[in-house]
Structures are given as structure tokens and as C-alpha cells.
Length: 123
Image (tube, rainbow, N blue to C red; front, side):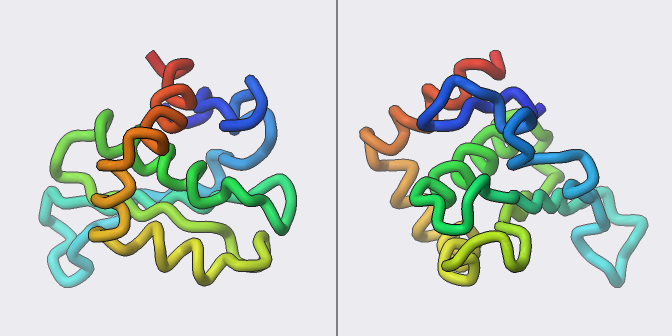
């Protein structure tokens, strides 16, 4: 579902670049106190190719958009950078977790053009 998303700079899938891998994806109950609830949380840990990747936030946004479009509404999506994989991982993770920032990014036509191009290989 996300392995074929293209890198924004190169026409190479994120899985081939080892930015996404199956071992870094987990699905857990969204409500830990109610494990029988149908709500689930999908967590994806991204590993940028270099520790100072300037497009880490864009890649994270692309993965988030793809999952939110493809998964049923009962899934909550959590996309973040793997600990120690990026020089500003805390800042990027904060942006990716902030619903208002993500919503603002989704309204940016230029940014959504880049994300749309990344997702063309998923269709």
C-alpha cells in the first residue's frame, strides 16, 4: 500500500530506498483499554536515506495521505521518523502529528502537487 510511493526527488519507490519497510509498520488497538474496539492505529516508522533529508516531512505527509485515503475510517494513522534516523526527527514528528499543520499542508496546492506525484505510482 505504501511501498510503491515514489521518492519526491527520484522516481524510485520508498521501499527500494528502505525508507519504508514492513518491520516498521504496526497495527494496534486505538483504544488500549478497549482492545475489542474495532478502532485500530497504524504506526509507520520512516527511515530517511540521509540524516539531514530536507524532504522528510513531505515524505511523511505523502505516506499519511496515502494511508488515510486507502484505509477504512476506523483506522487512525501515525506516521513518524524512526528514532535517531534524522537530525530534526523530533521537529518533523511534531509536524506530522499536528492535525492543524497537516490540514494546512493539505490546502497548499504546491505541496499537494508534490504529494500527488509521489502517489501516482500507487494507483
